[in-house]
Amino acid sequence: MDAPAPVYLVGPTGVGKTAAALALADRTPLEIVSADSMQVYRGLDILSAKPTREERARVPHHLVDILDVTETFSAAEFKRLAEDAIAAIQGRGTLPLVVGGTGLYVKALADGLFDGPEASSDVRQQLLAEAETRGPEALHARLAGVDPAAAARIATNDLRRVVRALEVYETTRRPISEQQTEWQRPRACLMLGLHMPRAMLYRRIEERVGAMFEAGAVEEVRRLVEAGIEQSATAMQAIGVAEIIALLRGERTLDETKHAVKGNTRRYAKRQLTWFRKDARIQWYDVVPDGSHVEGLARAVNTALGRPEAEWSS
Image: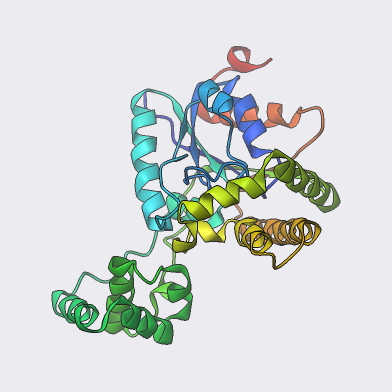
């Protein structure tokens, strides 16, 4: 029997992906591969809406709590780790369910990433020599001049990625950030999406953010600052971190902070929907309060697996 191909479950933040994935696990043997750029970080639990320990004990989760908040992360690194996790899950004869809302990560895993030109030892040695004599800050400033988008997401002290980005530019005379948007032809795969009316989604987001603050989001960020999160260009992108840091510095009130986090989360959800709507492969399911949308998801998954309805239907 062939190993089950990965299935993707996507949608905007707050739409209920975790709950649907757990419910699906009651209907077919699966393990979850998180496609969330912030759930990889240890300690970033509340603001990333990370599955609880109980939920992770109920269904195996992969790519959760694998990095310190000082470490950077990228779509390429996610793709490599996710492919390793998927291979291990398939080796156990279990379905890999990729769950998340980070569109770039989902796209990278489903369709591949731009690999770039082969490494040029001459160019790389010149760049490393420049970093040695002028410092990594100078090299990062040089990258900002030719590829500001790449410089914005690569930490100044992440010399390996700064050098690679400059190497690609020097070799091709095109920014790596531009070339990384050039995907392979979309591959056939089962991709399921969760949807709900915009007003309902925004109301859930408001409630969710309120619950995050009640659960201790401010204290979580205080601990993350002590752990060095401000050194990470990746973890600092988590919605709520910069806003709460401003609160801790006395630059805004608690009410202003909550308002900012709610607004930024709504805007992020809108960007996620815009991204996913461009992918014609996604089969959309309306989220309903009684949870019956999970039956539609289960039917799609188990049909793809060739399992008769009697084996999974509740």
